[in-house]
Length: 428
Image (tube, rainbow, N blue to C red):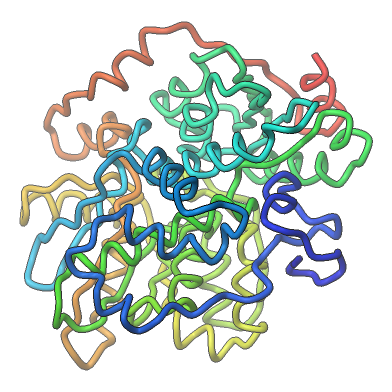
């Protein structure tokens, strides 16, 4: 169903292929199922793919067990380890997929789900996606070469790192990169306008791979359960700190808790683009244009998934405050955190994960009891090599898969921040 409640309900395939609901809302399950207590008790020691299968099964009713398990195993063919840095400090490394970013989990799952859904469709699809950083590379790599699916990626000119840009502008083939003269909010607005313009949406067979697509969020629930399983039996319920930009990752964690995830609370850790922390403080949601920071994937002034957060809590601010602690952090604080963790633990944080670390420290100081804190590490530090090397005065070796991207020619088209320019580029 739509978060705005003015569109007819869709099944998962309909929501997957539509992306955005016709009323401009975001699709959500009509009911979030509660997993049995026995599953939660058996989390320690269970492999990721087994946990994912149990969490996914209630939503993938059109799949038999073998199809569902094969899809999950194919999408999640990399590790998501929980690294302990201190007695109660853990980092969940979500960057071991093909593009070294957490969005590989959602993008790979969704791409395989979409490929399965269109096998009987006579027309090709166009996956239209806006990126402020890692979404573009994850989606491009996940859909690259898939028959019957074309990918168009909008990204803000000059506002993604060179490595991030290289990962999706050097593929070619069925991947088109569109460099928008504007910020991420302009890119996101163009995507929404395209979906809400029937002539464009129908003509081009548009669907989305942003976190506005519910199929991106469902698999992101998997690793929250997997993290708790890796803590081991007998541990207190943890606090999760999620670096937040468009808030899809945090929304997935909230959905996991509604399903029964053993979790004390969440931290919505942001940089200075702090629309949601300000809402939690004041009760007023006032989005602002995105400001450029060193944690660029979080430079979102008007996060789409805030609609879903309000829907989950029936717009009850007090309930939301009990579950979510908001924090905001400057570039200077982020750089200091990178230095602190490296000096104390010999561990490298990328700028986004550093924001999550700062938010977790702030949250744990408010609690009356010791609890494990888990920071979601959303990107490999090498993707922000220039920033980290300048900050720490060390040299970071690039993984081979990143180094190869930088050697390939850039293939992108520059467009203005208006729907006519986007439509012309897509038709071309």
